[in-house]
Amino acid sequence: MFGDCITRFSKFGGYDGAKLVKTCSEIFKKYPELYKTSTPRSEIPLVSRWYFEGDWGSDEEECKDDEGPNWRTIIDLRENMGGKPAPYFSRYEYHCIIDNMSTFGKEVALGATCYEHLSEYPKDTNEGQKDSFRISPAPDGAITINGRKFIKCKPL
Image (tube, rainbow, N blue to C red; front, side, top):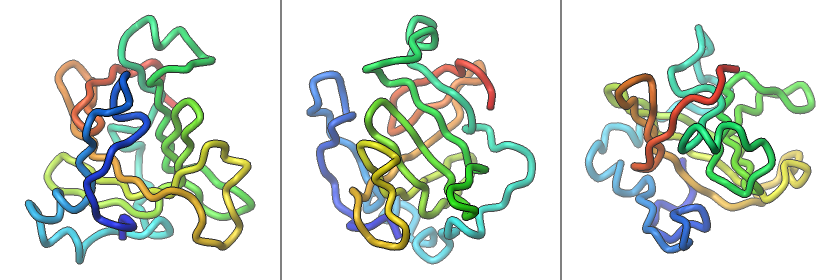
């Protein structure tokens, strides 16, 4: 599922690197039915784009900065690598292949395996760091990712 369902600190949890990130265990405690209904990567429905797909930033200034380091985030469920589905969640030096997705109401939980560089993405091994992301719609077309607000820089 989301790997080890633990609460841990994330290097992207805050500017000081110490903001606590709530992982899947808390989501599953609140919504236990999700553990049984998570959709694996190969079965994520690809109808029109999901509301959270796109290029996101914390503010207008960050949207103009293509090089980082910053919080700018790209989420694309239609990506392929080597002819196989490889939906991804990507930030500066933190690139994740989405393993599964759960929805509850308008919220989405993504389980992923993350790497410093996508070139580290293994063919069929279990390497990489497990992580999860909770995404919710916010006013004015924005979203929150693990409680942090993002505005859309540009669509995919």
